[in-house]
Structure formats: structure tokens, C-alpha cells
Length: 433
Ligand SMILES: *[C@@H]1O[C@H](CO)[C@@H](O)[C@H](O)[C@H]1NC(C)=O
Image (cartoon, rainbow, N blue to C red; front, side, top):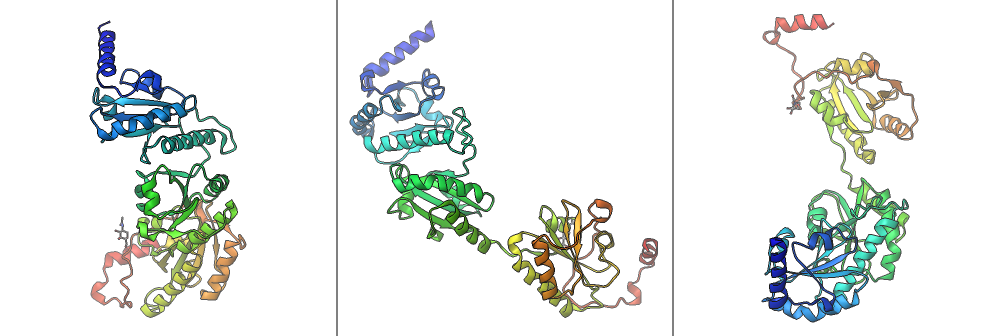
């Protein structure tokens, strides 16, 4: 009872002293006590203005905001929070200045800031864009699965970009991005939307596709010099700045977008690192999670000096570059060092250099039968990439044990002098053999 009284009293103070809007304006006065029920638990989309009665910009927004409420009546709900009367809500939603307009859309838990012009028309457009997005979130993706207002638009891989998340998601990522700047009212943008979504799905894992409502996030659109809609910008892989954005000059169908972006992806794939297998962890780095791992065993450094070995390594790197879009792992070891590995791939014993391509997921491998040369390796790998070639199960059907050895120092080999020979080493060797 006392609580009710204080709410009534508060309502009276707010309403009587300084509230901007009355119920006849169609703007719902929101307070900590009704916000949950009215906004968060409501299925409708809400536009909410956080204001302070003393703020000049808030005062000048009043006529436009009333106009907005009238125009959106029955379509989108419009509310206001007098943050001066109670700062709970403005604190909760991180309001830093007045007026702040937030759109509580499909995902009520994370409202978006409206940063466009403070006119009824511009705000209404942003509201309608949100309506459209919400509806498409349910209809789109073909499944027709209702997201129950949680905002998870399952099946839609297009990432919604805003002024707030743009730099974090796009510029601060190593991924390749294609970003569409659109306007909710633009016909070409509407035609592009389903193609964009389809392309995003197909390019998943390779290229990210984003969309930014340029009318709601005008400063970003200005930053990228967006003059017409839709405008598509390409952001290359690796670290990037705004000035690295390039114009997209491909077609507007899903397959056009996929092939254009796919080419960029291939061009942007770095050549794989050729890793010397010196212990378990280098072996894992080289081969773990790779569709295939190209393992080479090179002659002992006393049989093939630094110059000879570097030639082999260069040949391998060249092939690595050539097949880089396959995302294979590339590793090598000196003959005789990783005996378990050689044995399980059946490459030991019949002469080095040798090569095997291993699929560690399926525990299958193929051995290079031709020459260990540019042409021989190229032919072998080409067959592999087409799924041809003879495969055999990895001996023991498990990853071979890798022993820790010193990495190659890049120098020619030294015949061991007598003092270097440790008798205990010799005993160990005997045991192993
Ligand atoms: C494995 O070998 C690499 C290169 O030789 C070395 O940098 C790394 O510290 C080694 N890791 C372990 C766990 O021994």
C-alpha cells in the first residue's frame, strides 16, 4: 500500500511538474515500475526517448516526438523516460546524454541506439526498418521457425552492423568482410537482401557479410562516403583500417557475390608455414585440424647438406603456396629422427626424401611414388586434391609418437668427434634397434 502510494506520488510529481508528454500524445510515460511489463515483456517494438526536462535538445524534440507517436500509432509503440525523475532506467541502459533514443526491437535485451536525425520522419524510418527486420527474422531463412522474440534470427548469417559495433567487428578482425550499406526504403536494397543472406550462408567460414542501415547509422555511412544505396564495400583479410575499404564491383546475385568474394578469399589465404617436426607440439601445430597434412622426410644432413636441404624445403614451400587454398598442413622431419612417424606412414627405410599425405581424421594416408621434385610432387598433390590416388590406413590407426629433437640449425652437418660420443647414447640406440 505504501509502495503504491509512493508510485502514485511519483507519478503525480512527474506528471504534474515536468513531464513532456501526456497520455493524449500517444507517448507512454515509462518508469522503473512499468518498464518491464510495458516494454521488455511486450511483443511490440518500442521507441524510447530518455530525456531530462531541463535539456534544450529534449525540449525541441517534443513536437517531432509527438508527431512520431501519432504516425506510429498502432504500428510501433512510443515511450519516454524522464531520467531526471528517476535515473534507474537510464543507468540500466547506459544512457550518457539527453535526449537518447533507443529502439527496443527483436532483441529486447539489447536495444539499439538511434543516432539519426531527430525528426519524426527519420525516427519513423528507423522504427519501420526494425519492424521489417523482425518480421524477416521470423519469415526468412526458409524454416519459418519463430524466434519467439529472442531476436536470434536463425539461418541468417548476415551480421547486423551499427555505429557501435562496426569497428570492433569489422576493422578489428582478421576476417574478410563485405559490408552492405542500405536504406530501409530502397528498392534495390530489398532485392539484394535475400541474395545477400544466401551468399552469407555459402561464404560462412571464409568471408563475413554484414549490413548496416545507413539511415540509422549515418556517421558510419559518411565515414565510408556512401552516396547511394545499396553501397557494398570490401574489407581485406588481416589488420585493416577504414581506408583499406574497397569498392565491390561484382554482381548482385548470390552466386555473383559468392564467386567474387571467393576469389578474394583465395587471394588472401596466406601460404602455409612449413614446420619442422621437432616435438609433439610442432607436429600438432602443423597437422592438427587440417584436412590433410603433407609430411616430408628429408635426408640426413650428412647425406644432403644445407644447400641440398634448402632446395628441398624451397620445393615444398612452392607447392605449399600453390595448394594453399586447400588449407593443408605442411611438415617435415629429418630421416631417422621420427621413426614411429616414418613407420606408421611407411615412408622410412626405402630412401629419403619421402613424402606422405595424411588424413589424421580418417587415419589414412597416401605415399608419393613418383619423384620428389616440383613436377613429381605437383602431380601427386593434384591427384590427391581430386580425390585420386591410393590410400592406406595409418599403421596402428593412431597418431604416431613424436620424439623431441633439436630443430635444424640451418647449417651443414658435422661429423661427431670422438669426445662427443656418449656411451650411454650408444646403448640407447642399440636398445631401440
Ligand atoms: C617444440 O619445438 C619448438 C621448435 O623446435 C620449440 O620452440 C618448442 O618450445 C618445443 N615445445 C615443447 C613443448 O617442447
